[in-house]
Every structure is written in structure tokens, then in C-alpha cells.
Length: 285
Image (tube, rainbow, N blue to C red; front, side, top):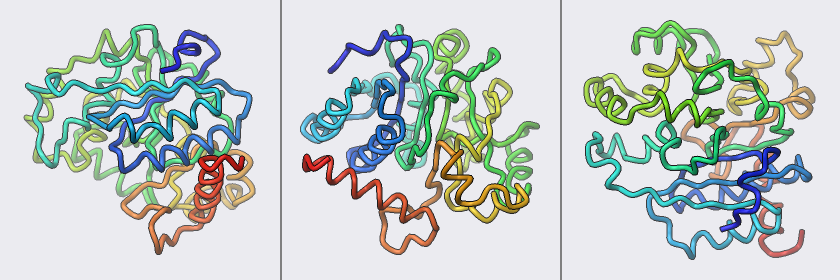
């Protein structure tokens, strides 16, 4: 484990969580991060439930070649003895919200990214966002109409936008003061029938009012919804605009760009970074 960058104030801290099957997609994410900000320093934190060390070797090697610190964090299952856990509510769903208690106390801020993401422009402006005393900063995906947003507000009894939890800027220091694991477990237990996307629903219901809204077209662009962004912006957010301005492309939903038959237009861009990752792994780049 490379600890050299962890305490650097200029180093961007990235968190992700996944099982072993998603490690190749983490590598694609890392490739996209490096290519589009080659001089930036990063630490990569991976919270997991038991990925074998051998499976982590390619990621370790890639991070080393990029000059990134890589910090796998094995989560002790005993921490979730009192948590509602089932097939629908796996213990991993709590990792994001409880990250302040599993990561180094030297970390005061971290950027969580789902592994089904490409970073195509610098992350520094998001990293340096003034969170204005909030626990989180996140974007809302309103879809093709406001209907989905309104339904989620009624379902969860909230009056703020429904935030997507795939990109979260987190104030870890504040989280250690305000987030209480037992309160999250109690809420999950009491509202089990209402939770459709459990960890995302919990974020919105419990901490939505402590979340700063950020622009999804920049920081959590739903790769399925190009036409929606184009219409919403009255034609401004075309492909050229996305490539110049959007930093985070998020391949939301069940269909993924590494699967055969993916139909959305940014799939070819993902394939490009996937191909580059293969070259990096073989030492061609």
C-alpha cells in the first residue's frame, strides 16, 4: 500500500466500492481519470467485503504506473451485526454512508465514484467545491420529465431533488460528527417496504437536506439521456459541449457499455477507454 500521497493537501481522494467482478471496470475508470488529468495526484480507496489479494494485483500495478496511492480497505462484517441485511439489503449498501468510520481519520474529504463511470475532464473543480457546511454534494437526475423526481419525493416524504448516490463529494470530518450507524439501521428496518434503491433512498430520506446540489450535466451526466440534456439546454449541450465540459459520464441503469448490445451513444467512448486499459495492462502505453 502506497501511503506517500495520503496526507498531501493537493491530492484528490477517490473512494469506490465493489466486488471482484467490477475490478476490470474500475481499471477503465482509472484509465479515464489519468488520461484526462495526467499531472493530477490521486489516492484511490477501495472498500470491499473480501476481494482476494491476487485479484487486486492488476489495479495495484495500474495505480503504481500512474503514481497513485492505492488503499484497499477490507470491511469487517462484525460492524453490521445489528444492521438489516438481506439479498435486497446487502451490507455493502451501507459502505458509502458509513465511510467516515472505515477510512483514515486523516482524511477530511473524499469523492465517491461508482465504478460504471468515465471521467473525461478534470475533477479538481468538483474536489474544491465549497460544500457550505453540508455532509454531501450530489446531483439529481430528473429524467425526461419531473415525474420521477416528484414520485420519489412523495414516496420518501421529502421536498428536495432526488439525489443520485453514484457521485458523492463527502465531508468525512463532519460525517464522523453527525452520521450515526444505528440511526441508519433503524431507518432501514422501519421503512423496508418503501426502499426501492436502498442506499440511494436512505441518502435522500435521511441526509437530503444536508446535501448540496451540483450540476448533473457536469458532474454526474446520465449517459442514457443525451437527448434529454440537449432539449433541456435548448440545444447547447450537444456532443461537443459534453466532451468539452462534462467531467463525469455515469452509465446508470442495468444496461452497461461493456455488455453486448448496449445501444446508447456513449458506449463507443467507453469501448475506447476499455481498449486503452487493455494496452496499459499489456505495457503498450
